[in-house]
Image (spheres, protein in one colour):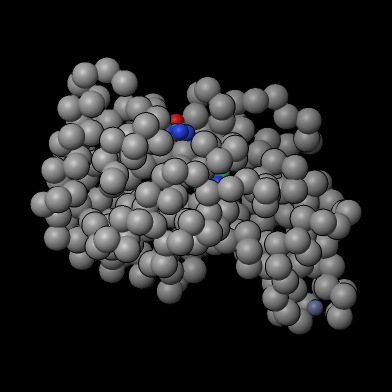
Length: 247
Ligand code: CNA
Ligand code: ZN
C-alpha cells in the first residue's frame, strides 16, 4: 500500500474515533476475499467473464428467467452464487468486533451470503435478502440453504411439492419494505457512512446515498459514481484497509 493510501487509512481511523454513529454499507467486494465472485468489477466480475449459459448473469437473475427457466436458474445459482463453504474473512470479523466495541452501529449489506452474521455481527440489514432463508412457494415452509445446494435440478418441498425459492432479491424486485425502512432509519441516524466493496450502481445504493448528508467514505478498488460526493475515497483492497483501521 502506498504512502497516500496509508495516510487515508489513518484519516479514516480518526473519523471513526470522532463519529457518533458510524454505519457500514457493503457489497460483493466485501466477500471476494472469502472466495465469492462479485458482479461488476473489471478484474473479476461475473459480468465480465464468458458465460456457458443461455443468457447473461443479469438476465438470469430476473424473476422472468427464474419462472421460465428454473432448471438453468438453479444450476447457475448453485454453481456461481451459492458457496456455503466460503468462510467469513478478516473484514467480516473486524466489523463484528467493531460493533461489539461500539465503533460501528450497523452493517447494511447488499450481499446475501450471510457472512456478516456468521462472523458475529448482530445488527445486520440484508437489503437484498439472504441465501439462508429459503421458502416453499406452495406452503411457505422454511428450508435451510442445503435444501437448495445439495439437490439436483429444481429444489422442491417434500411436503407440498412446491418450488423452494431462495430468499435473494432478483433484479427488478423491490426490497422488502421493512428492511428498506430499517436501512433508511440507520442511514438517517448516521454521521459517518463507510461504503465498502460496492460499485454503488445497483438501485439500493442511490436510494440510500442520495438522501444522506453526513460524512461519506468509499473503500473500493475501482472508481464509483459517488467518488466526487465522498469526503474520503480509498482505492485499495478492503482487507488491507481494514487491517490498518482495526484494531
Ligand atoms: P458489484 O456491482 O459487483 O460491485 C462490487 C465492487 O466491489 C466492485 O466495484 C469491485 O471493484 C469492488 N471490489 C471487489 N473486491 C474488492 C476488494 N477485495 N476490495 C475492494 N473492492 C473490491 O456488487 P454490489 O454489491 O455493488 O452490487 C450489488 C449486487 C451484487 C447485489 O444485488 C448483491 O446481491 C450482488 N452480489 C452479492 C454477492 C454476495 O452475496 N456475496 C456476490 C455477488 C453479487
Ligand atoms: Zn411446501
